[in-house]
Each structure stands twice: as C-alpha cells, then as structure tokens.
Length: 354
Ligand SMILES: Nc1ncnc2c1ncn2[C@@H]1O[C@H](COP(=O)(O)OP(=O)(O)OP(=O)(O)O)[C@@H](O)[C@H]1O
Image (cartoon, rainbow, N blue to C red):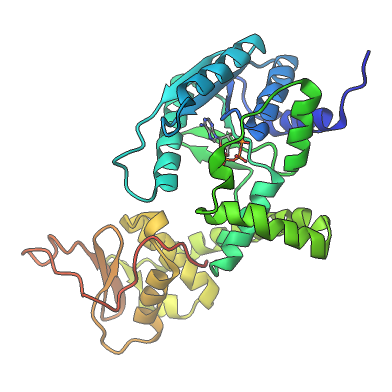
C-alpha cells in the first residue's frame, strides 16, 4: 500500500481535531470554492467524518461573477458526490445591488447563502478552508491599518454563525500543504483569478509582501504571524470578559452609563466597555471605528460641554450630568431627525483598534 502523503495526513489530523468535540446531530458542511484550500479540506472531511461517526456534506456558492462559474460549481458538486459527501448543494447568489465594494458584496452574499444552507441542514458545523497563510495576511493587513488587539487576533478558529459553529480547521496548515495534498490526491483545484488581482490589498500582500518577508526573515515568519493572532485572541478573551463585568458595573440606575465609573477604568478597558455598549445600542460592529470609540471616550475624559457624538446606525450619544445616554435622533427630541454635523465626526466602515 502506498504511504500516505504527509500533507494529506496533516490535514486529516487537523480536521479530526477541529471536529472532535462537536455534537454529531447533523452533518459537518464544508464550504468549498473548488480552490486548493477548501478542496483539500473537503477531501479530508470526506475521509475523517465517517470514521468519527459523522456525516460530511459540501456547499459551493456560485457568485455568477465570471464566465463558466456555474459549470465550475457543478463540477465541484459532482466531485463531492463521487467523494461520498452528502448533502451536496450548489447555491447561486445575487451579488449586484448589495452595499460595499464588489469583494465585500460577494462575501456578504456568500456567508448569507452558507448560513442558510447550514441552518436548513441543522449542520453541526460549517467548515471553511482558511489557512495559516490567510491568517498571516489578515494579521499583516490589520497591522497596516493600525488595528488593536481585536484586529491582530485575526480570524478565530471557531465562531458562531446564526447558531451553527463556523470552524476553520486549517489555520495552522500552510497553503503549500493544501496544494501538495491536492496533488497527492490527484485533485485539480480551481485558481480564482481574484486571488491574483492586484486591485485587492489582500492579493498584493499575498503576491508581494509575504514572499519578501519570508525571503528576508525566513519561512518561520508565517507561523509567527499566526501565533501572534493566537496570543492576541487569548488576551482578547480575558479583556472582553473583564470589560463585560465593567460594563455591568458602569450601568446607571436611571439608564445609560455612569461617567464616574467609566472615568475610573483603565483606558484599554474603558474603550472596550464603550465599544460593547455602542454595539448593544445597535451600532453595526463593522461600521464602528476606533474614532467613534475615541469620541465616546472624550465625553468621559475630555468633557468640555461638547455636543452629541454620532454613531453608525443613526445613533447619538450625549453626556447628561453624570451619565452617558443615547438618543435616537429621529424620535428622542420629539421632532424631525437631527441633521448629522457636516464634519468632525468619524466616517463609517473603518475597522479600528481595540
Ligand atoms: N464560492 C465559494 N463557495 C463556498 N465556499 C467558499 C467560496 N469561496 C470561498 N469559500 C470558503 O471561504 C474560504 C476562504 O475563501 P477565500 O477565497 O478567501 O480563500 P482561498 O485561500 O482562496 O480559499 P480556497 O483555496 O479554498 O478557494 C474557502 O476556503 C472556502 O471554505
């Protein structure tokens, strides 16, 4: 019998570990583009799942953005059926007409479709093929935009997606290994032309920045960047827990947050408390930047009678005596919406520190 290729074995082990503690009430569903990472992942899931008392299925999303995308999606699905995966689904999504740039719109459409399929099948997890290289790129991009610990933590190995765990088993596996596994298994992955398109910052990091880092600092740099993400994630977990308690302690009996309690917190904790409170009020997390949080912080620490701070989601927060309170500009004053100030307020959509 031929020896098992090391990359194939490493990926199987990673998948086995990642799904070991998941309940087995439904299939684990692999989100597969047909690219090397998710194809190697799907092949490993097809092998591992039945040996651990589970079933594994596959879902591939056709964004309809390139000629031949429907045929490619069908080819992925036919391969999956032959590989013994079930259920297998191809979902066609509509990308046009969504907010944000084309990449963000495609991503949103894809996650919406993947979530819908995972929930419908009562999947015990949705697996994606993000690798250590993807994680290294994410950390570098976060550094480059001045992100804080939350950004530097990169992608979590597990998070919730509408009640279904989204699991990333390959975060410690290199992209070279997924390619090598596909070769060893005789699989021909699809090369997404977007991955090479220099219009995207991530593609430029992948094509230009990472190779320079590896050449100048050595191959360990990828592992190191991924380790930074893990260390940051562990610190974040603790800080988030502390911030949760601090938020509870800062609630004012008359509503809002007590300025005195906030002022006594360490700045790093206060920033997190204000960020969580803003989320709780309804500010969309992706649109809430470090500048919004800094403006809230100034209501506490640099109070000079300034006017309200505006947050994404149509919220405004003001300081009233010893409290921070929020008002919906459309209703709170009993009249028409208060116009947003023309300048001096942070723009939305810039993921910041913290
Ligand atoms: N069209 C798609 N259908 C289903 N899942 C997808 C699709 N595109 C991406 N994914 C999932 O998201 C993960 C990350 O995708 P992305 O395109 O960012 O990375 P990638 O490194 O090119 O991955 P891959 O080699 O698997 O395409 C993929 O590994 C896959 O699990």
